[in-house]
Length: 357
Image (tube, rainbow, N blue to C red; front, side, top):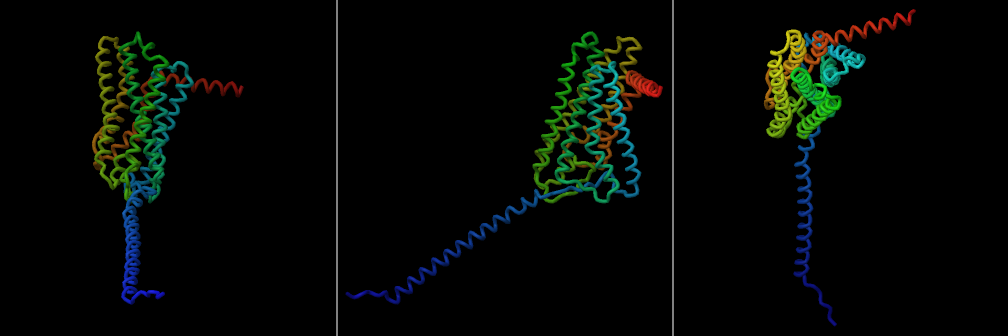
């Protein structure tokens, strides 16, 4: 039998087919490699955008000649805030005569002020003596959360205190029923829970955005608007939600406060001069605190994240000035607190004399 051998032409055809398949396979592999390379290039910017590890504050002022003076001034403010509010807490808890709804909420306010100032002021004070004012990414997240948590708690506590004054002055016969111990605890708890929800939403909305290695914050604290300016994405929706979540809360509570004080003023016309004087003294001190705190808050948060030259100076009022004024106003203009402090001091002195004797 004769064995057929492939012709030279058929061998050449088979070789061409083999080479074409090999080239096609190589091109496929090159295409896949290029596609993977393009995919990696596409994702690099996203990785870089979320790769911010720290932020840099510009601070309250860039004038190095003023740093030492401002450092001493804010350190004094912080000491006054801590000592004054701790003294109020000690006085309220030590004197049974002050175990009333009004002083229960005042002690809540003092605790809020201590925590609120401690969230930002120590960092700001230390930054005055450093050339580079840095904060880690998660440090910034934590500072914004605590700053808005205690700040919103102060707004709600001040609003509840206005309601307490309204009930005491306008509904004196029903006051103990309206402001019972359970009601006071519920109102305080709602204030803290509302502040917690506000702070969580505010912080989440801000830090779910990419920052594209933008690190310089034109402020002395991690607040919403200065941080949003670093985002490399559209912040229109977030800005609107911030206005609703911060600005409208501050404005709404402020309007409630104004309404309650208007009703109180009208009801005082029928009272004796002595009761009118005492009520006006209490409400006047409260309204002073409210004005210094709410008006700057409304100015800052009831608008998009556009900055004005006065923003940092205005924010000092609700971050430092108001917490410092609270203990001064509520002690210097409140006879009950002053008498309680005198009683505690005299009681402490008498105990020391007995121990010596």
